[in-house]
Length: 638
Image 1 (tube, rainbow, N blue to C red):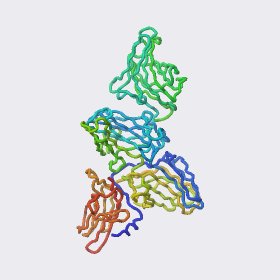
Image 2: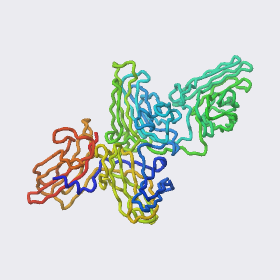
Image 3: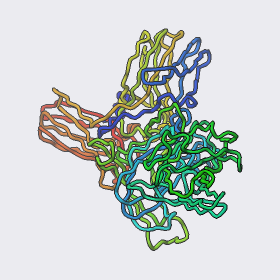
C-alpha cells in the first residue's frame, strides 16, 4: 500500500459510534456571530427570517464578477442574551461529604480565559442521593472582573462545574449532574429558602428585623412539611408600636412587571404590609390583603403585586424589600410564612431555550477538561440513571467522584476539583451535519467548511445546489464526503474544538440568487457497519470509533470485525491523513469466516499516537489470487 491511495480517497470517513441525539450547531438566534465575506466584485446580505424550525439565515447574493460569497458562523461562543436566557437550570444529586459546588461561566473578552470576565455561583450540596432541579438566575451570580469588568452574555465561551472546600469540609463525595439548560424564566427568585441559610440569591441577608415602641419581632427559617420557608413573628401589643422584617437586595429589576410571592398565616386574617425601597422612605406600604380576594389565610396563596403600585421607586436599584406590621392596623401579634419571593414578567412564558449539555456522552469524546488542586482528585464517567425526574429509560448522567485529602499539603488553601469545557460544540461523536435549505435564482455551488481551533479546515462542495425553486429541502452531509482544504498547526481536524462553520456560494452559473439555511445540526449516530456482498471482504464493522487509548479501561481499543469469503492473507495497517504508514496491526493468513482484530493506539514503536484522525486500510488476498481492500477513518481521542 502506498500513498497514492490517499489521493483517491477524495473524502475521509468520520463515522463514530453510540446512538446520540442530534446536537444543534447553529439555530440562527446568534445573529451577532454571522459575518459576510465576499470576493471582489460580489455582494452578500445576510438576514434572519422565519424558517421551518424558527429563525433561518437568508443569504441574498450577487456573484457579479467575483467567484464566491460566504456566511461565516462563529460557533466558538454562545449568545445567551439574544434568546432571552436569564438563568441556567440543571439537575443534580450528591452523596458522601457535603461540599461547595461552583457553577462558572466565562465570556470572551480575550482568547485567554484568565483575562476574561467570569460569573460564579456557589451552593452547598445536600448529600442525600436525591435528585434536585436547580435554577440559578444570572443576576444571582457573582462577577469576577478579570476582563473588561462587564460580563458579556452575548459571547459566552466556557462553562465549569467545580467542587471546593469553601465550607472547610474535606473528605470524599460524589456529584451526579444531568441536563444543563439555558433557561428563560419569567421569575427571578430572591429566595426559595430551600437551603434555610443566608444569603439570598442576590447575596443579601433575609433575617433582618426592627421594632419601635416596645414591639418585638423575629425572623427565621422554618420547615412546613417538606418545604423550607421564611417565618416572621411579631408582637405589636403596645400602643403605636410597629415591627418590620427586611430582605437586602441591591439589584437592578428594570423590565419586570410584578412582585410575586407565596404567603400563609398562622391564624388567617393577618394584616401585613409590604414595600420596596430604592432609597429610604420612597415607597408606599401596601397591604398584602388588597391583592388577595379573601385576605391572608392558613393556606399558601400566590400574591402578584404590580410594580407600578410602588410609586416613586427606581427599579434600577432596589435596595430592600420590607414586610411591616403595626399596632395601628390591628396587627397585634401573629406569625406569617413567605416562600418563593420573586420578581416576575407578566405576559411571557418560561421555557428552556437550549441544552448546554445533556451529559449523556462518554466524557472522553467531549471537550470537557478536568483540573484539580494538589489536595484534590477527581474522576468522571457517564452512567445510566433513569431515576432522574422526567428522564427516560436510557437516560445517562455525569458522575463526578471527588476527594479532598484530610491531611492537606496546603491547609491554608481552598482545594478544588473542576470539570470545564468551551461552549463550542464537540463533533467527535457524530457522523456529519444536516440542515434544511431552499433557494431561488441561478444555480450555483454550495461549499461547507469546518475549521478547528488551530485553523485546520476541511470542506465539501455540493455542485449546482442553490436553486430549489423556493421549496424547502433537507440534506445530510456525512463527514465521509469532506476533504482537507487547508492545514493549521498540525493538519489534523480536531472535532472536539470546531470554532467556525462556513457556507460559501461559489460560482456555478453565476448571477444572483437567494439561499436560506435553517437549523444546522448533527444527525443521530450509531456503530459503523457495512455489508459488502460479493466481495472477498464481505462485511465490516468498527466498534469504539473514535476510541480513547488513555488506559482508563473504557474504549482503550478500537475493534475491527470483518468476514472473509475465502481463506486469505490479511493485512491491516494504520496511516496518518498524509499517508504515513505508522502501524501494521496484523499481517497473517486467516481462514474464511468471521475475524476480529483490535488496535490499542500505538505506532510500530509502541508509542501512543497523538489525538486525531487516522486511516485504517484492510487488505486481503485469497489463495486463488483475488484481492480486496477496505478503508475507513478512525479517531483517537484521549
